[in-house]
Length: 300
Image (cartoon, rainbow, N blue to C red; front, side, top):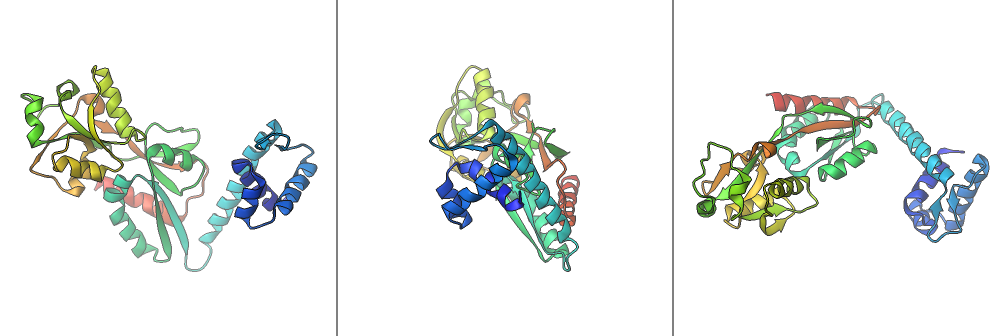
């Protein structure tokens, strides 16, 4: 049994299609089948059930793949830990982060990293927290920034400053709120007559908002659905509808005199972001440097 056979088996477990995996690996299908058969002969059990369409993993195969993924991950960590012993400290820092946090958290960190480690390439993988949590647990990033909760049996956690959420309401829609003070939290029950611009239902911020509205006994009047916070903010500025945004984003993007910001009800006032790394993962010197700079940015 060798590393290549483990890689082949893991790749096959993900698509359960010999021809697709062979094409991706750049080998022939018979060669792939031969390697998998040799692996099964060596371990003494069948890992894949070829009698089904599509191919399926056997119970032994499911156990084997879990262990093989762990072995391949440990091999990757070992190789990465040796990078710093190479002259020049060349490397790649992969960070999982949401688009809006990349906007307000990463620019100064990226500048400091470039100055301290000119031969290190920074790669930002932008996605939502749900995807980031899953892929961080799989070891796809050096570290990621996600919202709580996370599975702390799989991930190590470093807290960051909380996101402060605000309800942004175009001034032309203010009469629909009645007499509401900007100095006190805006109850969601007062928002029933507002039109809203919200991010998609796949995003946690949208689900959080709709859950709280449902708790107040109504569904928000979503007039426009968008993907990014930047689009939601620009739509709000144009008077299309109100929206829920982190205050840190608005401060970075620039406030607008045509929009009034209200603190929302207590249950929606903040979200807790954290830096996460896979438990037991090797952290390079430059990954630790980037994390330290993030913490300094938050505390500074």
